[in-house]
Image (cartoon, rainbow, N blue to C red; front, side, top):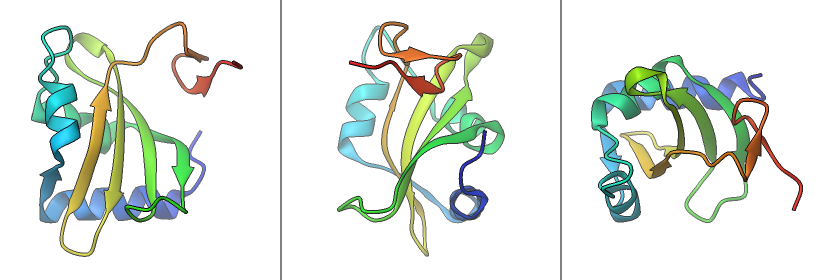
Amino acid sequence: MVRDLDILQQVRSATQKRILYLPHAVRQMSRPDRMITTSEVRRAIQTGEVIEEYPEDLRGHSCLILGSGTEKRPLHIVCSPKPEFLAIITAYLPNDDEWEDNFSKRRPK
């Protein structure tokens, strides 16, 4: 379910220019229990869907994308499109305990 096609279009357009991985994203992606590759992030962005949007984010309008990586493992990518690049804020493997509906909806706390 794409909530705002405009943000998704901005994300995909920014991806074509350049992708900047913020330090937090690099740390999360390189954890031994995750090992998320940049190609997986690209694939998730190109084929995934926006499941949450954060228009008031201090880093700029951002969103959470649900996509799939290697062997169809689910990936969550938080990113913010900029005029010159796409900032990858974080990338992680969603947890069954925190997400439902195939990792597209947060479980109530």
